[in-house]
Image 1 (tube, rainbow, N blue to C red):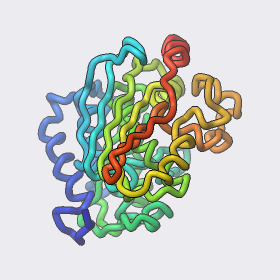
Image 2: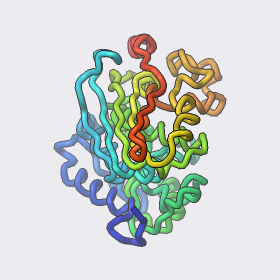
Image 3: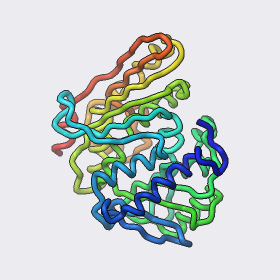
Length: 322
């Protein structure tokens, strides 16, 4: 897929069409639609409204810019009694790294949020956007913020100016982590974490042509801090990702053991405890921890399969019952 200026193949164009649809169905999805600063559109998925599971599923697909599909599945016995969030895409690098990855920090005064969604491709602020040639020009942009407050006017201004669009062409979707929609959209990042880990290990992610991931859907936590712990653990200890790749086997055998979360020195404790051990500083946590529990590679060129990592139900049960 190539990004075509203002064309129908752009990430933001695809996401805008899906965002328009959820605005139309806002009542059924239990969403709030607000006019933000300078005519921007703010869609509330759980700050001051109920939201729900379907809202979270739709939020996750918008975050994937319509290039991935999200659904719910039954529990996996080896993982535990929790339902699963399933993600699949035939455009994994564009959907997950070009759009879904939360790589844009937005902070003004007391407001802070990590920005994801295709607005990142229009802003082009992150090295990963430039390195993988995801940069695009868009007439309208869509972003997703994981936060408990609706974005203030100066955040909207920053987004609009960074993306080279007027504020009225900015649509922002907001969900707290400890909401149904927020929890679903975070757990729907199983494939994204695997691809980002591969990218950090300097593996050519464009070799990945299709991807499928599952992770357990934890209970909805009473506060955002607990929710951050549970949603991370869902992927770190219960996430299973399958990647269909092209190319040689030797590079897969070399990188494969380093991809799952159990390759990290911080593996083995619930994420909330790891977070606490580092003084609640994300940047002190070993970055190699952030990946699924199990990663499987199917090489389409050689027909060989490689499986790495292991599920850890014991840690999930400790985490989700805390």
